[in-house]
Structures are given as C-alpha cells and as structure tokens.
Length: 321
Image (cartoon, rainbow, N blue to C red):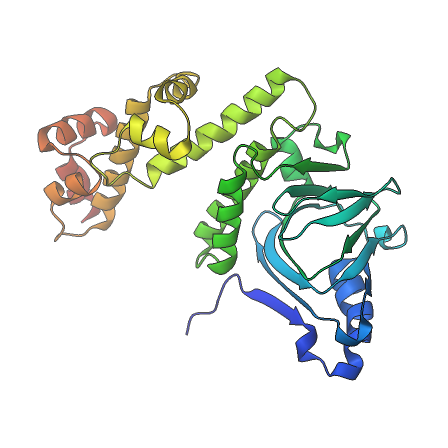
C-alpha cells in the first residue's frame, strides 16, 4: 500500500470531550498550532475545525472554521520566530487591527496578505470559514521585491489573477498532489499566482512591477502550453483566451526571451517526443508518438526532430532499446 506523501492534517473541537474543549482551544489550537490567543464569544458552544496540507518550498494550504471569536497575535507570541506570510480569504466580513492601529473591515472574499511577524488582532462576529495559504517569506519576497515595506496588504476579490489563485488553492486543498514532482509544481504555481495578485499593490515602481508581472505571466503561459501539447489545435489564440490576455501580449513575452510562441511549442513537443521515444519500448510506433505530442504531419515532425537533436526518431528509439 502506497503512503500519502502530503497528507492533510485536521484538528477539531468535536474530537474533544465538551468539558475539555475550552482548554483545548486555549492551550493547543491557539498557542501551539495557530500562534494566537483565542477568546470565543460563547465558551459553551465553541466550535473550531482546522486543516492544513504541507507542501514543498515552505508552502501550506488549508482551511479553518470558527464560531464567533476574537484572536490575537500578541507581542509574547511573536517570540516564536514565525515570519511566514499568510494569505487569507474569508467567507464573512470581519474586523482586523494591525500593530495596534484602528481596526478596519475586510469584506467577504477580499484577500488579506499578512506577515506573521506583525502583531495583530481579528474579530469574527459570526461563524466564519477562512481559506489559508502560508508562504515562505524569502521565496515570496524574491517574487515580489519590497513586499516587507508594508505589514499587510488588502486585495479586492476582483483583482487581476485573484479568481484563478482562489480556485487553484481550493482545488489543491481538496486534491493534494500525489507525487513529489506534482507537489513541487503546484507550490511554484501558488507562489507565481500570489506574486501576480500582489503586483500593483506592492510599492517599488512601475518598472519593477511590470518585470515581475511579465515573469509570472510567462511562467503561467508556458505551463499552460506544456499541459496542452497533445492538442493539435493548440495555438496562441486559445492560450490567450485561457489566460485572459491578447495574442500580441504573449508574443511580446516570448520575444523578450529571444524566441517566438511557435518555436516554444515546437521545441516543447519535440522534447516530449524524445522522452517518449526513450521510454516507449519497442511496441510504440514513431507515428503514434508524433501524433500524441501534437504534430499532425509526420514529415514535419521527422525534419524538426533531426534539426533539434541531430538524430532521427528511429536513431533515438534504437538507442533506447
């Protein structure tokens, strides 16, 4: 039986006898797990459920449910040294105060990006569900330079890239990766999408923001292409529609790398064909592989393959056998 590489860990007050729940909330869930003090509005009917899946690159995704509560990341608790960034999406409006400043309201669906190294207090006045993403401080700062100029960022739910990030995180939470390779790729996607969402909110100048945005966009578009290589109808217009940009914008992104969209697709298909020829064994035909990677013409495939690898598909297949 294969073990789950990235299990989801869950904790709930429902798993604790009623007379022990308040102590469980104060001493375990709050301080040791959440790094916060929690004061339930109704200690007799407190209900808290939290879950989290830890992934590579210091990333974790999860969800929490809380009955009305006040929570605080106090000066004392800051001594735990946790300086991760949290990305939080609540299903209810709530209040939060950062570093002792006046509290402000966060609308349902808006995104709060918050440093765990900052003192803060929040108040849920009704049962609230919150999606959480914990981000490695150094990795996200590399993608969004000067992020630490502010202790927090409030991002509207309609901000560019936000629906894509929210849906991706929810899918990842429901269906954790089954392999280390998939988990690493998923973690990179979350960081890239987060930096795309932060673009325009982090100070640092339009030039820096545009470079960061272009880098993230190019990565997302390239990943889109790699996932669609077997589609013979793959073209710049279909990718542009999925990514919500214009074909000309995609062309400019690839031109900044010194190649075209068409060249990237062709080379990616040829690289995939090379791997399949090495792994396919004797039974898998070259023609089948050519069609499987998206080529509709065998002569074009063979000519392009020889130009890229200075060998024919038959040479690679014989060598592998």
